[in-house]
Length: 318
Image (cartoon, rainbow, N blue to C red):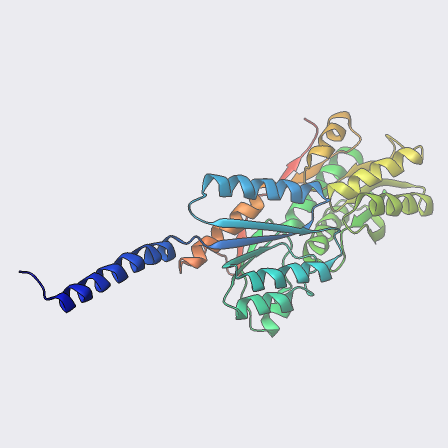
């Protein structure tokens, strides 16, 4: 049957509309979620390794999500990290995976992201649970038991190189971060159990230069110190230099945390006795996987404390 001319026009219009709408609908259906990974200092090898791991994972799952990665210049620059998160909110990301520079200061901008409908997953350094609770926020934390990891390192140090009553110093990370606090607590657990004397706890801000300055100060103020326990390997690198400069190589033990590549030659030759591996390349991946699951409406498998535990292991001389 041949349609009258007006009918043919209508049919063509309907067909054209369908033809135009179909690709648009398909494009919307195929649109990948955008995941923002916001880290701490990219001057720290740990976070560069984390970023490399995340990029490799995205490349292997390119059809599942798009990745935007950012980091700050130094470990204490929480204000710049807040600005980065605000930029991610404006750019319309679907998920935010964040290693906060400060456990309390970043909570407000995390709330802003969640209020904008963004799924948030916390990695590496835990946002303060009490501050989150005060703002009625529930953010899963993906990461290791930092206290356990530091305790393993401290126990190995005490068993292998120290005797009861020996003096030790702890070089802490940024004091307002939960992971720095937990690692210091783990070191103290081990030292107190072995009856060592912790004569000083000072912040090295996670950085080599600051770790070096703090270590030098401790060695000068407490000449009988037998070991320096650093909250990350960057500060341990600084401590090794301070020990050498003080002429105490072999007399003062150094331990760290993170198992970055730069520490491995020092583990091999004994300048560093031990560290802890929390698998930097996988940390962001664990967080991204949790975020993608949440974007699908699924619940990640958290424990009673809203934590997804990831591995941490003692690393000693190969």
